Image 1 (tube, rainbow, N blue to C red):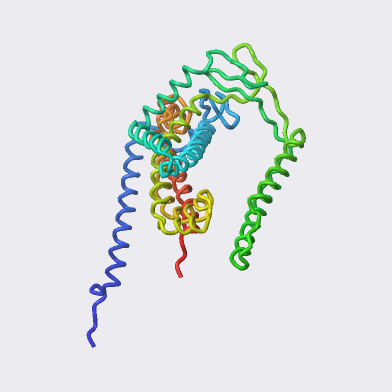
Image 2 (image 1 turned 30 degrees about the horizontal axis):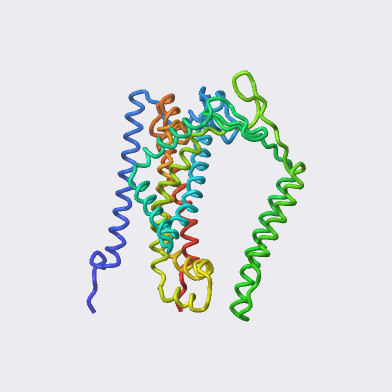
Length: 384
C-alpha cells in the first residue's frame, strides 16, 4: 500500500492554498489600515466616528425627517440616505413602466408607434446621463413660474419648490395600513386558489374583478375616513417662505425623470429581447384558439419572457441607483452631496465618510439584487 504524504494530498493542498490566500489578504488589509491610521495620527488628522454627534451647522433644502442647522452630522447622513433612496425609487418606478411600454411598443404592428419608440431609444440612450439631468433641470427652471402660483387649492408651485399641505397621521391610519396589507394578502391567496382551480377543473375565476372591487372599496372607505386617519395642515405663507406645509424642490423631479427616461431605454431592449425569445409558435397557437393579443401577451408571452428580462433589468436598477450620485450637479441633497460633499469639507475625515457612503451604495445594490433574484427564481420555468 502506497502512503501519500499529506502535502501531496490534493484535498489538503486545495484547502491549504485557499486558507493561505485568505489569511494573506486579511493580513494585507489589516497592515494597510493600521499604517493609514498611524500616518493620520502623526499628521494630527482626527479619526473615528465621534464627528457624527457634532452639530452640522448647515441647512438642507429637502429633508424627509426633521432637520435644521443644529442637527448632528449623523442626522445629515440619514437625510442624504433617505433622499437617495427616494430619488432611486421614483426613477426605478418610472423606468420600469416606461421601459415595458417602449419594449412592447417596439414590436407593435403599428408602423408609426414602432418608429417613434425606436427614435426614443436611439436618442436618449446615446446622450450622456449627466447632460440629460442638466437638460431636465434647465427645463423645469425655465417653465415653472418665478413666484409661488396656486395651481390647486393649497398647492403652490414655483421655480424654487412645490408646496403641498402637511399631513399629520393619526393612530387610526395604522389600522387602515394593516387592513391594506391584509387585503393584498387575501388577493394573492385568492389568485393562487383560482390558478389551482383552473389547473384542476379548467374553470376560471374573476380574479381581476374581485381584486378591483376590493381595492376600490378599500380606497372609498379610506377616503371616507380620511378625517379620522390623518389631518391636513394647509401651507401658510410667511415673510420669506411658507411657515407650514411640505416643500419639494424641483431637482427631485428633474433627477427622477432623467434617470427614469435614460434607464428605460435599456430596460425596453431587455423587454423586447425577452418577448422575442418566446417561441413564435406559441403565439400563433394562441391566435388560432381565438385569444386576444392582450391576453396572449399577459398570460403566455410575458410570464415566459420574464426569465430573460429580469437579469439585465437588475443591472439597470443598480446602474440607476449609482447614477443618482450625479445629483450633485444640480444641487439635489442626496448622500454624496450633503455627506460625502459638505460634511466631508467641514470635518475632513475622508476615510470614515467615504467608507460609510460606499457601504450605503453597496447595501442598497445588494438589497435590490436580492429582491430581484428571489423574483427571478420564482418566475423561472420549472423543468420536469
